[in-house]
Length: 191
Image (tube, rainbow, N blue to C red):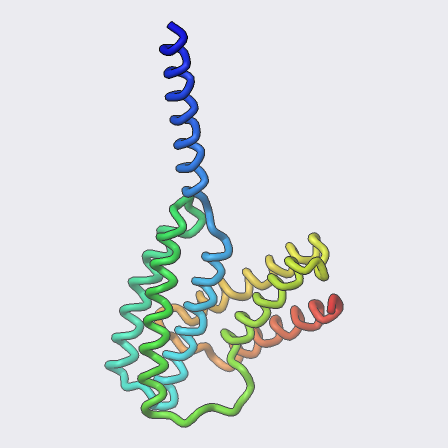
């Protein structure tokens, strides 16, 4: 009788432990989501710039855009969903591979740039600053949330503007740049 009760308790405890482990695996991953968005912004910018400057042929850019569109479709499925982290990892690996392939194609045809950073690169740098400030405690929690919200809004607007490899107009690029400048100035108050 005692062995039966003990066995029942152990089985119940084992099932509860297993269920807890499974629920820990399935969750939203906002950091991975932002990382994927950052990579998509930079990739779209590189494709647009490469096409504009002639560093990429229309066929190459279309091939890269098609690959990116497939990744973006998978991103939309994962976004804000409770999923296993490995699914985000696979998506980010695909984005890294596409970015490397684009860099190789651009590297064969263009000399290194020595101009101001692109908006996509600035978005990535600001994300790093916000993350570092929140982790180190130099950025108060309320301001950290506000800055993150502003950067998320800029990033999503920029993704929408450059969707499908469309090259952002000068006005659109300047608007995004002004918003990034404003965020940078506000972030500089917390150095």
